[in-house]
Every structure is written in C-alpha cells, then in structure tokens.
Image (cartoon, rainbow, N blue to C red; front, side, top):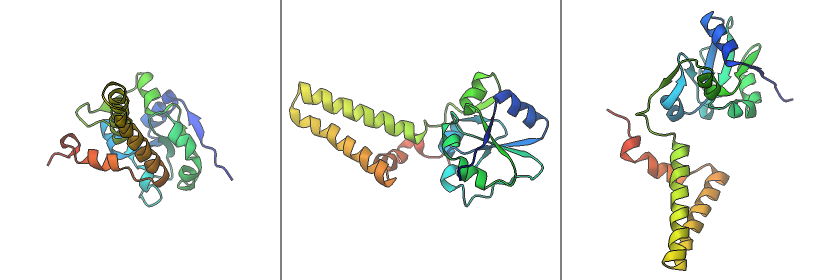
Length: 176
C-alpha cells in the first residue's frame, strides 16, 4: 500500500507553525540543512530516519520538507510510517517557502552540499578529459571514462569515493 501525504502551501504551513499547531521536519542531510533551512524546522535526515527520535507531539500536525518537495514525495511511505495520524508535505519544499517570501536561515559560509560538490568536481573532470583528449592526446579521454565509471559505481553501491575525498577538503572540515 502506498501512503499519500497531503501537500500544503507554504502559507498554510506558516499559519499552522505560527499558531503552534504544526511541527516542520526537514529530511535533508545535515550539510544541506546547515546551508539553508526554514527557521524552527527540525533536522531529521532521511539517511537515519527509521532510527531517529523524531521528537513529535501528538497534538501537532507533522509537515515534512526537503529542498524542492521531490524527496518527500518519493519517500511518502517511509515518512507516513513514522507518524501516528495525518502527515503533510510542504509543497515545493524550502525553495517554495523562500520564494513565498517566508523567512529562511541561510549560512552562505557553510560549504556547498556534498552532492553539489561531487557534481561540480565530476563535471569539471569530464570536461577536462574531453578537452585534453581533443587538444593534447586521445589518452586523456580515459579521465572522462574513469569519472563515468566512478559515478556508475557510486550509483550502484551508494559509496562515492569522490565524496569521501571531498569531505577531507579544508572547506568541509568543521570548525573546532
């Protein structure tokens, strides 16, 4: 059976939060949450969702959010299974909340989300391999093939070597 969570507009969610009738649960990973989130939202990453203590009150509506709403829609069953009673999704996620002019907490000094760093790094390596393959020597096309193989492996196994290496970069280390 597929659960269906009702979507609410950002204004509806803001009204419920202001009235103390709802709690907003952000299911994005900590690096995403640190960069930008709705003020007062609880961070409960989807990667550890089943084992996390959600800290929900039975007398308040539960509204789930992510960046765009796609992740919450894709995980309706998992989300609904953790809530007694009705649960909701913030339509359009944090992006729609911000576009509606509602307040968000933004930390521009926080590193870009790891997935975006991997996408940028992989893209640059592929472009470099192609450019060098045409301009210097065809052997450089192997760099693009290597990156493509790494991305395929990451997608198939859930282990991303590039993310592990990028996590060691100085800008991704937490301040003491």
